[in-house]
Each structure stands twice: as C-alpha cells, then as structure tokens.
Length: 286
Image (tube, rainbow, N blue to C red):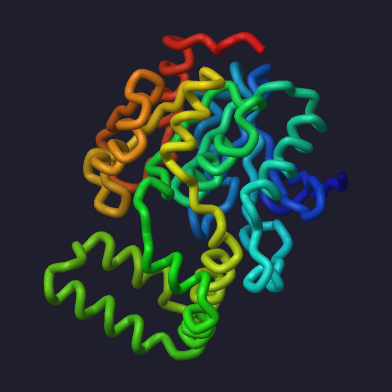
C-alpha cells in the first residue's frame, strides 16, 4: 500500500490486490463503511456525509476503476472484471483493515457494485445501504451490446462518431419515450470524447457485474443482512418504483425510504437519514 497527498489536503490511499484502487477515508468511528460512488464521480462525493457519520463510522470511499485517482485498465474492455474478482479484492481490503464485517454504501453505479458483493461475499457484510442504486432493472439491450463483438465495436465507434446514438436519444425524447431528466442525464454524460471514452471503458469492463436480484435477496435472508434503499422522490433517472424489483424477494429484510430530492442524493440530509437508520437498527454481532 502506498500513500499520496493530493490537492485539497485529502489523504488518498491506494490498495492493491490484483488491481489497484484509490480511496479516501472520512470519519474516525469504529464502524467500517465501504463506499462506492456514481458514474463519472469519485469517492470525494462522500465527504459530505462526514458531519453526520464521522463519529460512528469510518468511510472508505473508493474511486472505482477508470475514475478519479484510480488507474485505468483499458484491456478490461476485452477481459472484463468478474463479480468474484471484485469480491476477492474487497475481502482482501476488509482483511487489511482488520474488519470481519463491513457495511456497504453504494450510490447509483456504486449500488450495482454493492449488490454484486452481496452475491459473492455475504459472510463479510453487516448491512447494505443503497442510494438510488443501479442494478435494479434488467437491461437486455445493454447485455447484448456489451457481450457481443458487434456491440463492442459500436461502443468504440460511438467514442469517435456519436451522431448516430445521439440521434437515437433525440428521437426517443421527441417520441416521448424518454423523459427530459433522463435525456439530459444521457446527453450530459456523453457530450465530450473524454466522457464517451469513460462510458465505453466502464460499461464494457463492468459488463459481467449484473446482479441477480433473487440471489441477492436469498443471500440477505441466509446471512441476515439488512438492506436499506434510499431514493429521491423526484428522481427520474432511477425512480423509487425500481426498489420493488428487489424488495419483492425479501420484503422483511429489505426496506426503503424516500428523501425529498432528485437523483443527486449525496447530501448532508442523506447522512442524517443514514445515521438515524443505523441508530434504529443496531448492527448484528459478528
């Protein structure tokens, strides 16, 4: 493990187990929380939770592959990360901080990572906090594109020539098959070559990270892992109704609440909601 002090005075750490990821630590409490950010963001987004959670928790906020201070792995477009590979990495990390059990906190794309870890390393997880999580809706079109040679070629073409895909997005909006918020979200995430490269790299390298929600719920039941979902009432990117796709498998183990917000949920108010939830539901003993 090596250390670096980047700009803004936040200590950045690096952990290596096969691959390397950067992470930041926030807070000083005894509860270990592994936090995973959304697409195009970094672990620094979780700094806003420190005032609410810092006394009870230590947040290990990772920069996911291709993001922030973490290295890029362009070869992973052809040899993607697997769920078990990620589980081995974060199991090794939990060992390195001497924690038998940890909490997972995943926002948007990071929620998909957290769901996958429940499938593969449930014995190390105390509870899971999912914030507007990706991974709750099956996307067969994404799977077909990402897993086929032709589809991967389209992703690569999109980096250099986005006009066709952008035209499709524009058409869906005109036909009222896509709402304005999702439209702005998609266009905003692909309006430069740099952003399109990130889309290609992340979607292709994570194409095997597609959690089976029935298995996630079964693991939560078997290992007595509480899973709590936070949604923004006005979120049109990942709306609260998607929570049912997971909750229906284990309604007593998986709970949900809404906050008066849209998709941007990493706020001090979320920190207060998380700490209140933890106070109401004591952690199970290891």
